[in-house]
Image (cartoon, rainbow, N blue to C red; front, top):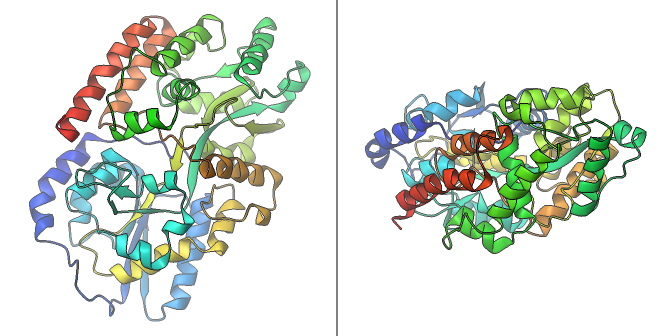
Length: 434
């Protein structure tokens, strides 16, 4: 399932409304060692890789904590996302829950004093040693809620990244080889276009268009660009490379027929089902599709990293967070620790997930193993570049609207860059005061 999520405005309203209550709420230094109940919420389906792994983690937790009741509730993502501030500040809230990572979500709640500082536990339990620097970025937040530095407010135990899914049967029948460079990628797409086949599935009405733009920009970017764009280290010029290259190249791909103009109105589900149905040779999208393709796709398929890029859109998965009002913090820390054990990490990997601390040699399915090996390659080289809509609240809708215009031809690349530049600058100013 896709882990790429956007901020709902209600979070900001809820978090703001609960700031005063949070100040007098939590039991940060209280002794909860006698707690006999752990209330745990997440929104993964039971048969997803994370759902399978976490179910086993609950079993281990119960065995190691006799007399402790685990009250697990599976919640809808939107239910938590829209009401997070109010939920975790109430007596009915959980002791530990899955929550989305990034400045606009976990960062926002941490800046409102609603999440527990996990820094001491991260040191004590060695969590930092299991997570690469780019994975730690989403776990740590400054006082203003900006990711990348400061205190630990969440712990991920799986990862995600954007890759290229391709239909091996269509590649073979059309004499196309797997590209290893951008030049080979465009040559492959030219071959498909020459045979009347649109090579790249797309969905302009949701996240895929923004992610393709970002992947193209990252092909000309470096870690400094990512730090500037995502972490506000320096101002970002939207009319210069790599962002200009991303928009110009995207428009060029539409003109050349690599991306269909009528895909401007399509959603991610449309793109995914077109790939499953063998209607398009390639899509550029996230590892969250992997399990579904494995279960539903009849054609022979595989993946390759976006050719030529050292940086890839991706990050840790969602975080385990402990609300400041949790009455069972010690138990919550124990549960987090269990999810990072090799047994759980390998279980996630063997069910089509991307664990952060698994031994790839323990993954039995070759496709599963390749998915994890590619992620490890990106993660170990500090190549995770996060997602294009992360920097400021509400940016997801800005990007969707902008790139729909680029696909359907109603906006030029320069106009799109203007469209997305101002909300970015306004959002950064609101967060940083600069």
